[in-house]
Length: 118
Image (cartoon, rainbow, N blue to C red; front, side, top):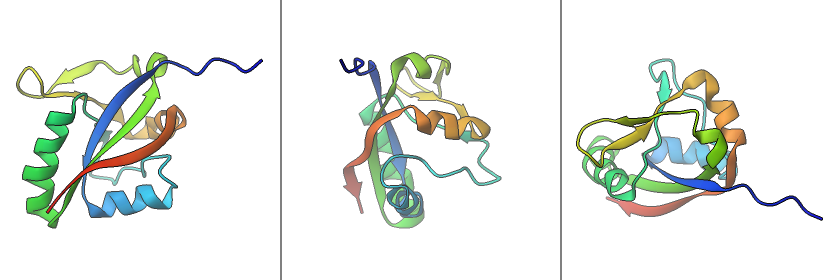
């Protein structure tokens, strides 16, 4: 008898070409370690917010922006309180850089690109 698949939470991450290349190198299963100036990894809780960042910020800074979608074990991800980073729908999780390996271990399935903006 197989164990039941955990309940998941869907998260999105707006990203640029450099980070996406590193995700590809990790076989679409994990996020790369943060750089020293990036103490927090912040996936977002809704697609519209991710689209806005990818389209309005990533394109301006690197010529292309991507929105990724991925599933994380819902029980595990509850440890990160939802942060409201602006308006009512501007919601993020703040994962400390030193916890990213453990966070990655709780990703279920692959990270997928769902939008691309140029």
